[in-house]
Amino acid sequence: MNIDLSRRSFIKLAGAGVVASSLGSLGFGEAEAQELAHIKPFRLTTLTETRNTCPYCSVACGIIMYSEGDARNGQAELIHIEGDVDHPTNRGTLCPKGAALKDFVRSESRLTEPKIRRPGSDAFEPISWDEALDRIARALKDDRDENLVQFNEDGVPVNRLTTTGVLAASATTNETAWATFKVIKAMGIAGFDNQARV
Amino acid sequence: MSPKPDPSVISNIATPDFARLPDPARLFARRAARLRALSSDARLGPYLRFLADLSEMLAGLAAELAPPAGVDAATIARNRSVRMPPIDRAALIRSDDMAAIWTAVLDRAGGLAMPDPARAALEALRSAPEADRQALLAELAADRVPEGFAAPAAFAAAALQLAASRLAATLDPAQLVPIRTGICPSCGGLPQASIVTATIQLDGARYAACACCSTQWNEVRVKCLCCGSTKGIGYRAIEGAAEEAAIRAEICNECDSWVKILYQNRDARLEPFADDIASLGLDALMRDTEWRRGGFNPFLVGY
Image (cartoon, helix red, strand yellow):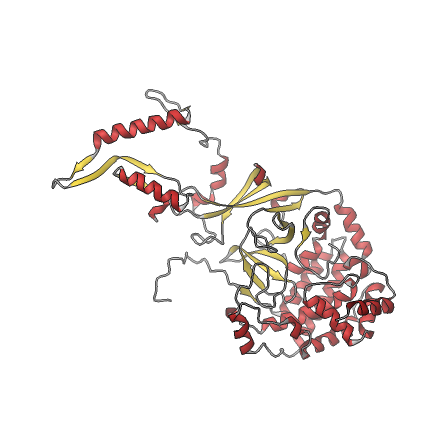
Protein backbone atom coordinates (compact mmCIF):
# COMPACT_ATOMS: atom_id res chain seq x y z
CA MET A 1 0.00 0.00 0.00
CA ASN A 2 1.39 3.38 -0.90
CA ILE A 3 -0.74 5.97 0.80
CA ASP A 4 1.56 8.87 -0.04
CA LEU A 5 1.04 8.16 -3.69
CA SER A 6 -2.73 8.02 -3.21
CA ARG A 7 -2.75 11.27 -1.34
CA ARG A 8 -0.88 13.06 -4.07
CA SER A 9 -3.32 11.85 -6.68
CA PHE A 10 -6.32 12.84 -4.57
CA ILE A 11 -4.98 16.27 -3.81
CA LYS A 12 -4.12 16.86 -7.42
CA LEU A 13 -7.50 15.67 -8.62
CA ALA A 14 -9.53 17.40 -5.92
CA GLY A 15 -7.47 20.56 -6.05
CA ALA A 16 -7.88 20.92 -2.30
CA GLY A 17 -5.34 21.44 0.44
CA VAL A 18 -5.16 19.36 3.58
CA VAL A 19 -8.14 20.20 5.79
CA ALA A 20 -8.17 18.60 9.20
CA SER A 21 -11.80 17.81 9.96
CA SER A 22 -14.46 15.79 8.16
CA LEU A 23 -16.89 18.69 8.20
CA GLY A 24 -14.34 21.20 6.92
CA SER A 25 -13.03 19.06 4.10
CA LEU A 26 -16.53 18.06 2.95
CA GLY A 27 -17.55 21.73 2.75
CA PHE A 28 -19.57 21.99 5.96
CA GLY A 29 -17.07 24.31 7.63
CA GLU A 30 -19.72 26.95 8.28
CA ALA A 31 -21.99 24.55 10.19
CA GLU A 32 -19.01 23.33 12.16
CA ALA A 33 -17.94 26.89 13.02
CA GLN A 34 -21.48 27.71 14.21
CA GLU A 35 -21.56 24.64 16.44
CA LEU A 36 -18.12 25.42 17.87
CA ALA A 37 -19.09 29.04 18.56
CA HIS A 38 -22.29 27.88 20.24
CA ILE A 39 -20.57 25.34 22.48
CA LYS A 40 -17.61 27.52 23.43
CA PRO A 41 -19.15 29.20 26.52
CA PHE A 42 -20.25 25.84 27.97
CA ARG A 43 -18.18 23.87 30.38
CA LEU A 44 -18.00 20.20 31.24
CA THR A 45 -19.60 18.77 34.37
CA THR A 46 -17.97 15.87 36.14
CA LEU A 47 -20.16 12.87 36.89
CA THR A 48 -19.26 9.58 38.49
CA GLU A 49 -20.77 6.11 38.36
CA THR A 50 -19.61 3.87 41.18
CA ARG A 51 -20.24 0.16 41.72
CA ASN A 52 -21.26 -0.81 45.23
CA THR A 53 -23.26 -3.34 47.22
CA CYS A 54 -26.70 -2.68 48.65
CA PRO A 55 -26.32 -2.59 52.46
CA TYR A 56 -29.79 -3.86 53.38
CA CYS A 57 -29.74 -7.64 53.51
CA SER A 58 -27.60 -10.69 52.98
CA VAL A 59 -28.51 -11.05 49.30
CA ALA A 60 -25.95 -8.25 48.68
CA CYS A 61 -27.33 -6.92 45.37
CA GLY A 62 -25.01 -4.97 43.11
CA ILE A 63 -25.85 -1.28 42.61
CA ILE A 64 -24.54 1.61 40.52
CA MET A 65 -24.42 4.92 42.36
CA TYR A 66 -24.54 8.06 40.18
CA SER A 67 -23.09 11.25 41.55
CA GLU A 68 -22.39 14.73 40.33
CA GLY A 69 -18.84 15.82 41.02
CA ASP A 70 -15.80 13.62 41.36
CA ALA A 71 -16.60 10.86 43.87
CA ARG A 72 -12.94 9.84 43.78
CA ASN A 73 -12.04 13.10 45.57
CA GLY A 74 -14.98 12.86 47.96
CA GLN A 75 -16.49 15.95 46.29
CA ALA A 76 -19.65 14.42 44.92
CA GLU A 77 -23.37 14.68 45.48
CA LEU A 78 -25.34 11.46 45.12
CA ILE A 79 -28.06 11.91 42.48
CA HIS A 80 -29.31 8.41 41.62
CA ILE A 81 -28.97 4.72 42.50
CA GLU A 82 -30.01 1.80 40.32
CA GLY A 83 -29.45 -1.97 40.16
CA ASP A 84 -26.26 -3.14 38.45
CA VAL A 85 -27.22 -5.08 35.31
CA ASP A 86 -23.79 -6.73 35.18
CA HIS A 87 -24.08 -8.09 38.74
CA PRO A 88 -24.82 -11.85 38.74
CA THR A 89 -26.91 -11.76 41.92
CA ASN A 90 -29.62 -9.27 41.00
CA ARG A 91 -28.95 -8.52 37.27
CA GLY A 92 -30.16 -4.96 37.57
CA THR A 93 -33.20 -5.62 39.75
CA LEU A 94 -33.74 -4.14 43.20
CA CYS A 95 -36.39 -4.73 45.86
CA PRO A 96 -38.48 -1.74 47.04
CA LYS A 97 -36.04 -1.07 49.88
CA GLY A 98 -33.06 -1.18 47.54
CA ALA A 99 -34.85 1.01 45.01
CA ALA A 100 -35.26 3.66 47.72
CA LEU A 101 -31.57 3.63 48.67
CA LYS A 102 -30.96 7.23 47.70
CA ASP A 103 -33.33 8.40 50.44
CA PHE A 104 -31.55 6.05 52.83
CA VAL A 105 -28.18 7.66 52.03
CA ARG A 106 -29.52 11.22 52.20
CA SER A 107 -31.90 10.69 55.13
CA GLU A 108 -31.75 13.40 57.79
CA SER A 109 -31.91 10.76 60.50
CA ARG A 110 -29.15 8.65 58.96
CA LEU A 111 -26.87 7.18 61.65
CA THR A 112 -23.36 8.52 61.10
CA GLU A 113 -21.82 7.88 64.55
CA PRO A 114 -22.44 5.52 67.49
CA LYS A 115 -25.31 6.67 69.73
CA ILE A 116 -26.76 5.47 73.01
CA ARG A 117 -30.15 5.78 74.67
CA ARG A 118 -29.31 5.61 78.37
CA PRO A 119 -31.69 4.00 80.87
CA GLY A 120 -34.56 6.37 81.70
CA SER A 121 -33.80 8.70 78.78
CA ASP A 122 -36.08 9.24 75.76
CA ALA A 123 -33.36 10.45 73.43
CA PHE A 124 -30.22 9.12 71.74
CA GLU A 125 -26.93 10.87 72.47
CA PRO A 126 -23.55 10.45 70.74
CA ILE A 127 -21.00 8.16 72.33
CA SER A 128 -17.36 7.52 71.40
CA TRP A 129 -16.46 4.33 69.54
CA ASP A 130 -14.20 3.22 72.43
CA GLU A 131 -16.92 3.64 75.00
CA ALA A 132 -19.55 2.07 72.74
CA LEU A 133 -17.44 -1.03 72.03
CA ASP A 134 -16.54 -1.41 75.73
CA ARG A 135 -20.21 -1.26 76.69
CA ILE A 136 -21.24 -3.73 73.98
CA ALA A 137 -18.52 -6.18 75.10
CA ARG A 138 -19.58 -5.80 78.72
CA ALA A 139 -23.27 -6.31 77.93
CA LEU A 140 -22.52 -9.35 75.72
CA LYS A 141 -20.35 -10.93 78.41
CA ASP A 142 -22.91 -10.30 81.16
CA ASP A 143 -25.72 -11.68 79.01
CA ARG A 144 -23.73 -14.79 78.07
CA ASP A 145 -22.66 -15.44 81.69
CA GLU A 146 -26.29 -15.22 82.76
CA ASN A 147 -28.18 -16.93 79.92
CA LEU A 148 -25.86 -19.40 78.17
CA VAL A 149 -27.48 -22.80 77.82
CA GLN A 150 -24.78 -25.45 78.32
CA PHE A 151 -26.94 -28.62 78.40
CA ASN A 152 -30.21 -29.43 76.63
CA GLU A 153 -33.16 -31.31 78.20
CA ASP A 154 -31.42 -34.62 77.57
CA GLY A 155 -28.25 -33.48 79.31
CA VAL A 156 -26.24 -33.33 76.07
CA PRO A 157 -23.67 -30.49 76.13
CA VAL A 158 -24.64 -27.58 73.82
CA ASN A 159 -23.43 -24.02 73.20
CA ARG A 160 -26.61 -22.00 72.94
CA LEU A 161 -27.07 -18.25 73.50
CA THR A 162 -30.58 -17.25 72.47
CA THR A 163 -30.89 -13.90 74.25
CA THR A 164 -28.55 -12.05 71.88
CA GLY A 165 -29.07 -11.49 68.14
CA VAL A 166 -26.56 -10.17 65.59
CA LEU A 167 -27.19 -8.58 62.21
CA ALA A 168 -23.92 -8.20 60.29
CA ALA A 169 -23.17 -6.09 57.22
CA SER A 170 -23.95 -7.35 53.71
CA ALA A 171 -21.22 -5.56 51.79
CA THR A 172 -18.31 -7.53 53.18
CA THR A 173 -15.62 -9.69 51.62
CA ASN A 174 -15.70 -13.48 51.87
CA GLU A 175 -12.92 -13.29 54.45
CA THR A 176 -14.83 -10.83 56.65
CA ALA A 177 -17.99 -12.92 56.36
CA TRP A 178 -16.04 -16.05 57.33
CA ALA A 179 -14.45 -14.37 60.36
CA THR A 180 -17.81 -12.94 61.44
CA PHE A 181 -19.39 -16.38 61.25
CA LYS A 182 -16.61 -17.97 63.32
CA VAL A 183 -16.81 -15.34 66.07
CA ILE A 184 -20.60 -15.26 66.36
CA LYS A 185 -21.18 -19.02 66.09
CA ALA A 186 -18.41 -19.73 68.62
CA MET A 187 -20.33 -17.61 71.10
CA GLY A 188 -23.38 -19.84 70.56
CA ILE A 189 -25.51 -17.08 69.03
CA ALA A 190 -28.26 -18.56 66.84
CA GLY A 191 -30.14 -15.37 65.91
CA PHE A 192 -27.65 -14.24 63.30
CA ASP A 193 -27.74 -12.95 59.73
CA ASN A 194 -25.00 -11.96 57.34
CA GLN A 195 -24.44 -12.67 53.66
CA ALA A 196 -22.48 -15.86 54.36
CA ARG A 197 -25.89 -17.34 55.16
CA VAL A 198 -26.81 -17.26 51.48
CA MET B 1 -37.51 -25.56 30.00
CA SER B 2 -34.22 -26.95 31.16
CA PRO B 3 -34.54 -30.04 33.38
CA LYS B 4 -31.88 -28.52 35.62
CA PRO B 5 -33.01 -25.82 38.02
CA ASP B 6 -31.38 -22.48 37.21
CA PRO B 7 -31.21 -20.27 40.31
CA SER B 8 -29.88 -17.34 38.26
CA VAL B 9 -33.24 -16.78 36.55
CA ILE B 10 -34.95 -13.79 38.09
CA SER B 11 -38.60 -13.39 37.14
CA ASN B 12 -38.76 -12.13 33.53
CA ILE B 13 -35.29 -10.56 33.51
CA ALA B 14 -33.61 -11.62 30.28
CA THR B 15 -29.96 -12.54 30.10
CA PRO B 16 -28.39 -9.87 27.89
CA ASP B 17 -27.64 -11.22 24.42
CA PHE B 18 -23.90 -11.12 23.85
CA ALA B 19 -24.25 -9.65 20.38
CA ARG B 20 -26.97 -7.93 18.35
CA LEU B 21 -26.32 -8.22 14.63
CA PRO B 22 -27.37 -5.47 12.23
CA ASP B 23 -30.24 -5.61 9.75
CA PRO B 24 -28.64 -3.32 7.14
CA ALA B 25 -31.82 -2.04 5.42
CA ARG B 26 -33.46 -1.16 8.74
CA LEU B 27 -30.22 0.08 10.28
CA PHE B 28 -29.53 2.68 7.59
CA ALA B 29 -33.20 3.68 7.28
CA ARG B 30 -33.40 4.29 11.03
CA ARG B 31 -30.10 6.14 10.94
CA ALA B 32 -31.36 8.34 8.11
CA ALA B 33 -34.62 9.08 9.95
CA ARG B 34 -32.77 9.99 13.14
CA LEU B 35 -30.27 12.18 11.28
CA ARG B 36 -33.14 13.97 9.56
CA ALA B 37 -34.98 14.50 12.83
CA LEU B 38 -31.82 15.88 14.43
CA SER B 39 -31.06 18.14 11.48
CA SER B 40 -34.21 20.23 11.80
CA ASP B 41 -33.08 22.39 14.69
CA ALA B 42 -29.34 21.92 14.78
CA ARG B 43 -26.54 24.24 13.72
CA LEU B 44 -25.03 21.12 12.17
CA GLY B 45 -28.19 20.75 10.07
CA PRO B 46 -26.54 20.84 6.63
CA TYR B 47 -24.06 18.10 7.57
CA LEU B 48 -26.75 15.96 9.23
CA ARG B 49 -29.00 16.31 6.16
CA PHE B 50 -26.13 15.25 3.90
CA LEU B 51 -25.47 12.19 6.07
CA ALA B 52 -29.21 11.44 6.16
CA ASP B 53 -29.28 11.45 2.33
CA LEU B 54 -26.20 9.23 2.27
CA SER B 55 -27.76 6.80 4.79
CA GLU B 56 -31.00 6.72 2.82
CA MET B 57 -29.04 5.81 -0.28
CA LEU B 58 -27.29 3.00 1.67
CA ALA B 59 -30.66 1.77 2.99
CA GLY B 60 -31.94 1.63 -0.60
CA LEU B 61 -28.87 -0.33 -1.72
CA ALA B 62 -29.20 -2.70 1.24
CA ALA B 63 -32.78 -3.48 0.22
CA GLU B 64 -31.92 -3.94 -3.47
CA LEU B 65 -28.74 -6.00 -3.47
CA ALA B 66 -28.82 -9.77 -3.20
CA PRO B 67 -27.45 -11.02 0.13
CA PRO B 68 -23.67 -11.53 0.06
CA ALA B 69 -22.02 -14.94 0.27
CA GLY B 70 -21.52 -15.51 3.99
CA VAL B 71 -18.30 -16.38 5.73
CA ASP B 72 -17.66 -20.10 5.26
CA ALA B 73 -18.24 -22.37 8.22
CA ALA B 74 -14.65 -23.61 8.39
CA THR B 75 -13.31 -20.05 8.74
CA ILE B 76 -15.86 -19.26 11.44
CA ALA B 77 -14.93 -22.41 13.39
CA ARG B 78 -11.19 -21.82 13.02
CA ASN B 79 -11.35 -18.14 14.04
CA ARG B 80 -13.68 -18.96 16.91
CA SER B 81 -11.25 -21.58 18.22
CA VAL B 82 -8.48 -18.97 18.49
CA ARG B 83 -10.80 -16.16 19.63
CA MET B 84 -10.64 -14.20 16.42
CA PRO B 85 -13.60 -12.45 14.79
CA PRO B 86 -15.16 -14.36 11.82
CA ILE B 87 -15.00 -11.40 9.41
CA ASP B 88 -11.59 -10.69 7.92
CA ARG B 89 -11.86 -7.09 6.82
CA ALA B 90 -8.75 -7.31 4.66
CA ALA B 91 -10.56 -10.00 2.64
CA LEU B 92 -13.88 -8.15 2.78
CA ILE B 93 -12.52 -5.09 0.96
CA ARG B 94 -11.37 -7.33 -1.90
CA SER B 95 -14.69 -9.20 -2.15
CA ASP B 96 -17.13 -9.03 -5.07
CA ASP B 97 -19.85 -7.65 -2.80
CA MET B 98 -17.58 -4.80 -1.70
CA ALA B 99 -16.72 -4.02 -5.34
CA ALA B 100 -20.41 -3.90 -6.30
CA ILE B 101 -21.25 -1.65 -3.36
CA TRP B 102 -18.26 0.62 -3.99
CA THR B 103 -19.33 1.11 -7.60
CA ALA B 104 -22.96 1.71 -6.63
CA VAL B 105 -22.04 4.18 -3.88
CA LEU B 106 -19.71 6.18 -6.14
CA ASP B 107 -22.37 6.16 -8.83
CA ARG B 108 -25.40 7.09 -6.76
CA ALA B 109 -23.70 9.55 -4.41
CA GLY B 110 -23.39 11.84 -7.42
CA GLY B 111 -27.15 12.35 -7.25
CA LEU B 112 -27.08 13.68 -3.68
CA ALA B 113 -27.02 17.35 -2.80
CA MET B 114 -23.63 18.27 -1.37
CA PRO B 115 -21.20 21.19 -1.17
CA ASP B 116 -18.52 21.63 -3.81
CA PRO B 117 -15.59 20.22 -1.76
CA ALA B 118 -17.56 17.01 -1.11
CA ARG B 119 -18.43 16.72 -4.80
CA ALA B 120 -14.80 17.34 -5.74
CA ALA B 121 -13.72 14.54 -3.38
CA LEU B 122 -16.30 12.22 -4.92
CA GLU B 123 -15.12 13.07 -8.42
CA ALA B 124 -11.52 12.49 -7.33
CA LEU B 125 -12.48 9.08 -5.98
CA ARG B 126 -14.27 8.17 -9.20
CA SER B 127 -11.28 9.03 -11.33
CA ALA B 128 -8.66 7.68 -8.92
CA PRO B 129 -6.89 4.45 -9.87
CA GLU B 130 -8.36 1.29 -8.37
CA ALA B 131 -5.17 0.72 -6.32
CA ASP B 132 -5.65 4.09 -4.59
CA ARG B 133 -9.27 3.34 -3.74
CA GLN B 134 -8.21 -0.02 -2.32
CA ALA B 135 -5.48 1.68 -0.28
CA LEU B 136 -8.04 4.03 1.22
CA LEU B 137 -10.40 1.15 2.02
CA ALA B 138 -7.54 -0.78 3.61
CA GLU B 139 -6.82 2.15 5.92
CA LEU B 140 -10.49 2.40 6.93
CA ALA B 141 -10.63 -1.38 7.42
CA ALA B 142 -7.84 -0.90 9.97
CA ASP B 143 -9.88 1.86 11.70
CA ARG B 144 -7.67 4.68 10.47
CA VAL B 145 -8.35 7.72 8.32
CA PRO B 146 -5.11 8.82 6.66
CA GLU B 147 -4.31 12.45 7.32
CA GLY B 148 -5.79 14.77 4.72
CA PHE B 149 -8.24 12.14 3.43
CA ALA B 150 -11.26 13.05 5.55
CA ALA B 151 -13.48 13.90 2.56
CA PRO B 152 -12.91 10.86 0.31
CA ALA B 153 -12.80 8.68 3.45
CA ALA B 154 -16.42 9.63 4.20
CA PHE B 155 -17.65 8.03 0.96
CA ALA B 156 -15.33 5.04 1.35
CA ALA B 157 -16.47 4.56 4.96
CA ALA B 158 -20.13 4.65 3.87
CA ALA B 159 -19.46 1.86 1.34
CA LEU B 160 -17.41 -0.15 3.86
CA GLN B 161 -20.09 0.20 6.56
CA LEU B 162 -22.73 -1.14 4.18
CA ALA B 163 -20.56 -4.06 3.01
CA ALA B 164 -19.44 -4.95 6.54
CA SER B 165 -22.93 -4.75 8.06
CA ARG B 166 -24.33 -6.91 5.21
CA LEU B 167 -21.70 -9.55 5.92
CA ALA B 168 -22.23 -9.29 9.71
CA ALA B 169 -25.95 -9.84 9.12
CA THR B 170 -25.19 -13.30 7.71
CA LEU B 171 -23.45 -14.43 10.92
CA ASP B 172 -24.98 -16.53 13.69
CA PRO B 173 -24.79 -14.52 16.94
CA ALA B 174 -24.50 -17.77 18.94
CA GLN B 175 -21.20 -18.45 17.17
CA LEU B 176 -19.60 -15.16 18.24
CA VAL B 177 -17.15 -15.09 21.13
CA PRO B 178 -15.77 -12.13 23.10
CA ILE B 179 -12.44 -11.10 21.59
CA ARG B 180 -11.24 -8.42 24.01
CA THR B 181 -12.79 -5.41 25.69
CA GLY B 182 -13.63 -2.81 23.07
CA ILE B 183 -13.12 -5.10 20.04
CA CYS B 184 -16.06 -6.07 17.81
CA PRO B 185 -16.73 -9.83 17.96
CA SER B 186 -17.94 -9.82 14.31
CA CYS B 187 -15.24 -7.87 12.47
CA GLY B 188 -12.61 -6.88 15.04
CA GLY B 189 -13.40 -3.18 14.61
CA LEU B 190 -13.36 -0.40 17.18
CA PRO B 191 -16.56 0.93 18.76
CA GLN B 192 -17.77 4.39 17.72
CA ALA B 193 -19.67 4.75 21.01
CA SER B 194 -21.51 2.64 23.53
CA ILE B 195 -25.20 2.69 24.38
CA VAL B 196 -26.99 1.90 27.61
CA THR B 197 -30.07 0.07 26.40
CA ALA B 198 -33.62 0.12 27.65
CA THR B 199 -36.02 -2.61 26.62
CA ILE B 200 -38.97 -4.09 28.50
CA GLN B 201 -36.93 -7.03 29.74
CA LEU B 202 -33.55 -5.40 30.03
CA ASP B 203 -32.87 -1.97 31.39
CA GLY B 204 -29.38 -0.63 31.77
CA ALA B 205 -27.21 -3.16 29.89
CA ARG B 206 -24.42 -1.53 27.93
CA TYR B 207 -23.63 -2.38 24.31
CA ALA B 208 -20.69 -1.13 22.29
CA ALA B 209 -21.57 -0.20 18.69
CA CYS B 210 -19.02 -1.20 16.04
CA ALA B 211 -17.92 1.70 13.83
CA CYS B 212 -17.42 -0.62 10.88
CA CYS B 213 -20.08 -3.38 10.79
CA SER B 214 -22.60 -1.91 13.29
CA THR B 215 -22.71 -5.09 15.39
CA GLN B 216 -23.57 -4.24 18.98
CA TRP B 217 -21.97 -6.31 21.71
CA ASN B 218 -22.48 -6.45 25.44
CA GLU B 219 -19.82 -4.78 27.58
CA VAL B 220 -19.69 -4.37 31.37
CA ARG B 221 -20.72 -0.88 32.54
CA VAL B 222 -18.22 1.53 34.13
CA LYS B 223 -15.31 0.00 32.22
CA CYS B 224 -12.93 1.61 29.73
CA LEU B 225 -13.56 0.37 26.17
CA CYS B 226 -10.01 1.29 25.17
CA CYS B 227 -7.92 -0.48 27.83
CA GLY B 228 -10.44 -2.57 29.78
CA SER B 229 -9.69 -0.86 33.09
CA THR B 230 -12.44 -0.52 35.69
CA LYS B 231 -10.29 1.83 37.73
CA GLY B 232 -10.23 5.58 37.18
CA ILE B 233 -13.49 5.76 35.20
CA GLY B 234 -15.33 9.08 35.27
CA TYR B 235 -17.91 10.88 33.15
CA ARG B 236 -18.19 14.31 31.59
CA ALA B 237 -21.34 15.97 30.30
CA ILE B 238 -22.09 19.43 28.98
CA GLU B 239 -23.02 21.60 31.96
CA GLY B 240 -26.64 22.37 32.73
CA ALA B 241 -29.08 19.58 33.66
CA ALA B 242 -26.12 17.21 33.78
CA GLU B 243 -28.17 14.82 35.85
CA GLU B 244 -30.45 14.34 32.84
CA ALA B 245 -27.66 14.30 30.25
CA ALA B 246 -28.30 11.39 27.91
CA ILE B 247 -24.94 11.67 26.14
CA ARG B 248 -21.76 11.60 28.18
CA ALA B 249 -18.05 11.06 27.74
CA GLU B 250 -16.72 8.05 29.62
CA ILE B 251 -13.16 8.93 30.55
CA CYS B 252 -10.38 6.62 31.69
CA ASN B 253 -7.49 7.90 33.76
CA GLU B 254 -5.51 4.70 33.19
CA CYS B 255 -5.10 5.17 29.42
CA ASP B 256 -6.18 8.84 29.11
CA SER B 257 -8.88 8.20 26.55
CA TRP B 258 -12.64 8.71 26.37
CA VAL B 259 -15.54 7.08 24.55
CA LYS B 260 -19.02 8.49 24.12
CA ILE B 261 -21.81 6.73 26.00
CA LEU B 262 -25.47 7.22 25.01
CA TYR B 263 -28.19 6.46 27.57
CA GLN B 264 -31.22 5.11 25.74
CA ASN B 265 -32.86 4.66 29.14
CA ARG B 266 -32.90 8.47 29.35
CA ASP B 267 -33.73 9.10 25.70
CA ALA B 268 -35.00 6.11 23.71
CA ARG B 269 -34.52 7.90 20.35
CA LEU B 270 -30.72 7.86 20.53
CA GLU B 271 -29.00 6.14 17.60
CA PRO B 272 -25.27 5.41 18.03
CA PHE B 273 -24.09 6.85 14.71
CA ALA B 274 -26.49 9.77 14.25
CA ASP B 275 -26.25 11.02 17.81
CA ASP B 276 -22.47 10.59 17.85
CA ILE B 277 -22.32 13.09 14.96
CA ALA B 278 -24.99 15.42 16.34
CA SER B 279 -23.30 15.65 19.74
CA LEU B 280 -20.19 17.17 18.17
CA GLY B 281 -20.29 19.89 20.86
CA LEU B 282 -19.21 17.36 23.48
CA ASP B 283 -16.30 16.32 21.25
CA ALA B 284 -15.31 19.95 20.84
CA LEU B 285 -15.21 20.46 24.62
CA MET B 286 -13.40 17.15 25.20
CA ARG B 287 -10.81 18.11 22.56
CA ASP B 288 -9.47 20.72 25.00
CA THR B 289 -8.96 18.20 27.82
CA GLU B 290 -6.11 15.77 28.48
CA TRP B 291 -8.16 12.81 27.24
CA ARG B 292 -8.05 11.68 23.60
CA ARG B 293 -11.06 10.38 21.70
CA GLY B 294 -11.15 6.57 21.80
CA GLY B 295 -14.35 6.01 19.78
CA PHE B 296 -13.74 5.73 16.04
CA ASN B 297 -15.99 7.61 13.64
CA PRO B 298 -14.64 8.30 10.13
CA PHE B 299 -17.26 11.06 9.73
CA LEU B 300 -15.88 12.98 12.72
CA VAL B 301 -12.23 13.27 11.74
CA GLY B 302 -10.50 16.07 13.62
CA TYR B 303 -12.08 15.37 17.04
